[in-house]
Length: 555
Image (tube, rainbow, N blue to C red; front, side, top):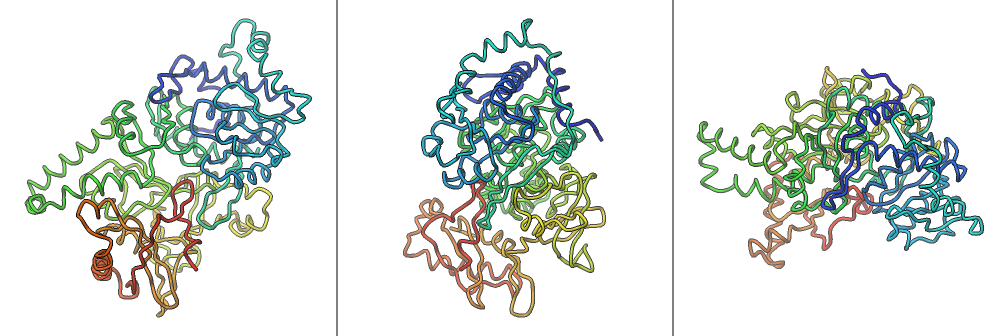
């Protein structure tokens, strides 16, 4: 295992990969070498120093993925300050609360977002700078304008600081403790309560060192970044690990629609793909399932030789559609639909499912695709421990998954009660996820502890498992299983695209849903059977990472 301090890992990477491409913006033709990135980081360090930013001060960044976003993040942690990423999808009131709660002294933001803000409502912020151009958008006190004056003279200041030009010898980042706070990442969870996860250099470094040691990215490899960098998953494995080894990261910077993603995959040809389940589930639902549901294909799949040929053709076409040069697809951020998972495994598609949470920055478990066990979430990392609380037989009897080790957070910022609720005296993080763990540390997740329903006869019912089956039924786009009195009710948002394709009217939809309910109840245990399906008119309200806000529908 690599033992170097995280900041020195970056100093070494920037020197070693000086002339290699570091970042590109998809579709714009703009690119940045590791030398360019190091220079821009150095320039921002000068600005921080001029504005009186000290090690440990908080710097907030809110905007879409971009060159500037990456520079702000990397410059902040390599200065010894604390980065506060704010998801650009947060509403303005929540964003302003996070900025204030984190005690941020500077804010970097897209101008279109700042137009909706009221500067006087973020009083701790001394200066607001644009992520779109070199511009100070607001400053306090107005009469001083220290940041604005310095920013206009920044090129001159850089020439004076580095009269012979900025070179590899000028990359010097502070030697600070791995226990130093590096990031406060506010969760976008489904419970309606956002908490500031405190991640230190050790937590971030644990993820980065594992990524380096596992060769997930490597010098000269290519990555396509389309997950939000403000979220721990995308941040760690689309930015922090790649930049530590010399990978060329192409930033999508646009809404990752399936059409745009497939085009970008074909052009960038990434060597590793980091994605959420929704990407593969949409490909399966829209492209693959219609093929395998054809009567001629179903008949052919019953013949062993033809089945092998068909599966090989589907696998090769899917790999080619995703660029054709990746080692594996790592799925994380949410559970992968079981039907999709089994099909991809049956065709030998190179994918694996990992497990993590913001509180671990994010990685807890991972297994390379050749060793991946369907239904699992990978093996617990070597630098982490896992156990099942409240279970006499953790390999078969579900209980709450608890973890501790290098990646586990310091706690929640200014929230001792919330910290005490999840971190016990022995350092175990209580994840809130229910599951089992095999003898070799492989984790199998059943559902969330808070969403588990206790059946009439005392059985544990995991709504997520029923929803996974229901979401594969005709004309179901997404669903939630809730308890209404003593009955299980399925809330369903219809798949209007499929209805239009099959010419199914709104009037006939309840009849189809009753058939769906009948079919679903044949697939689940008796105590999991649904008593009623309730149609809803609009999509479920979601967090910025597209998880349903369950708490809104439990009443």
